[in-house]
Amino acid sequence: MTPGNPCLPEPGPDCVVSARSLVKHYKNSDRPALNDFTLDVQQGEFFGLLGPNGAGKTTAISILTGLFPADRGSVLIRGMSFQESEHEIKRLLGLVPQDIGLYDPLTARENLSFFGKLCGISGRKLEERIQQSLEFARLTEQARHQVATFSTGMKRRLNLAVGLLNEPQLLVLDEPCVGIDAQSRHLIHEQLKEINRQGTTILYTTHYIEEAQELCSRIGIIDNGRLVEQGSPATLLQQSGRGNLEELFLLLTGKELRDT
Picture 1 (cartoon, one colour):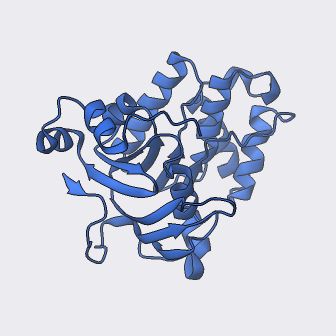
Picture 2 (cartoon, helix red, strand yellow):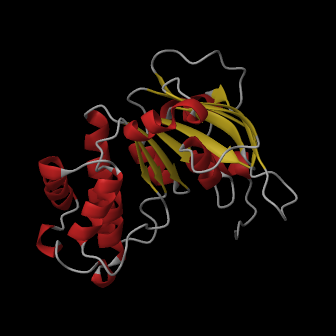
Picture 3 (tube, one colour):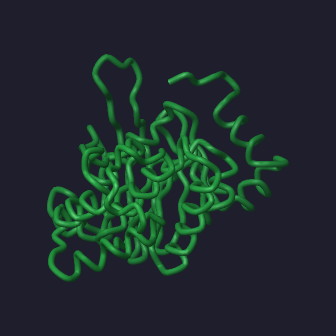
């Protein structure tokens, strides 16, 4: 079990994500959303960022994927910074946001075509990726249906397929299974495990302890904008002396209700 913000060495050649001492403040907030947040994710890991509501998970993901900058600190993706190599980073990065980013008036196929073109995919390759993505999302028969008619589970599956259009080396997902049925959740989990087995590095945020324990090779627990503990599920339990991850999670983050 590794303390949350150790004095980490410079990232090695297998480090895919390296964040150092990130700080982020929002206006009208009396506390930072991120406060000395430090993290490394290695090649091939399935890393889970686990934390209660308002812990800083989405802010961390937004900064790590270049959606907006930190006030202080540094981020490197495969040794590259967004300031100097944004285009190269975005070619190897796939993002699945918590807020579903689909266009309801468009069909599933039209959404995939639109986002594929944004990724720079065209011609026969685009058509191949659209067909593969529809099969991946189990939406081939609904390809020409408007997304507005889809259930939340169907939208979540298509949202994931969009994030995979460019065949990313690093896939970042922010609570991708919120509000969906058990069948869609199971399908997404199994697909993500297979993607990871094929070599894709995954960074996954969740506030569900059992989800992190099922999926992740390593877990970082975030609270109040800091990474307070990290390690494999087995190591976290063994070295903490706790009977299960829920006990450890509540010990580190408290039992007070989080309504934001």
